[in-house]
Amino acid sequence: MLVKEKLDRTVSDFIWNIVEIHSQLEEIHNCWAQLLGITEPQWLMLMAINELDEGNGVSGIAVANKLHIHPAFVTNQTKRLESMEFLSRVTSPDDARYLRISLTHKARAQIETLSSKRQALNSTMFDGLDEESLHYLNRRLTLIAKSTRLASQKLSIGIL
Image 1: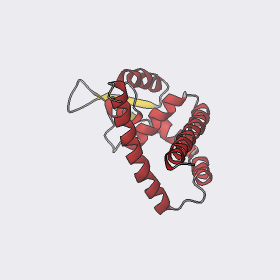
Image 2: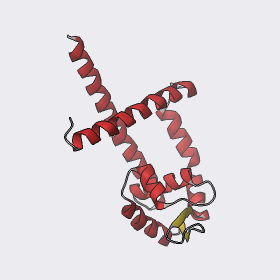
Image 3: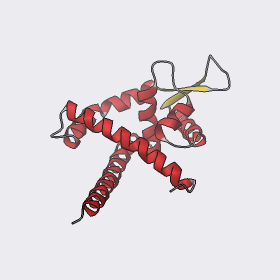
Image 4: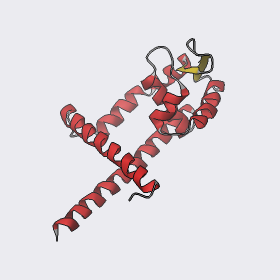
């Protein structure tokens, strides 16, 4: 097999592995969401808020950027999550045009009840990889994600 064909096959295998991982992660997120009685996108929003919030709440724009989704969708879904008492949305003290979104005690408590299952799941998913290997893999995936965004932009404007 020629070198280019081997590289093409390797790239194709990598892409299909990413597709498989994405599919499995989506299913896992759906399972977590169902346990809380919410949708998978709502679960991801809770996880993003949990990760981004440093004690003062987070903006909807920050959540949208983290999840690569439209801010209007975040607004719509956070209103629903607020009505379910998973989130609180308060006016930003810095700028009244913006809201700061935080998890409620109820949301934190329900997420905490899942923590041991989530730790066990992570152990299963990353079995055989030590911390150093995961750091290396994350650095490489970050590079690939950045390059993929650039390639997507080039394709959308007709450069490729």
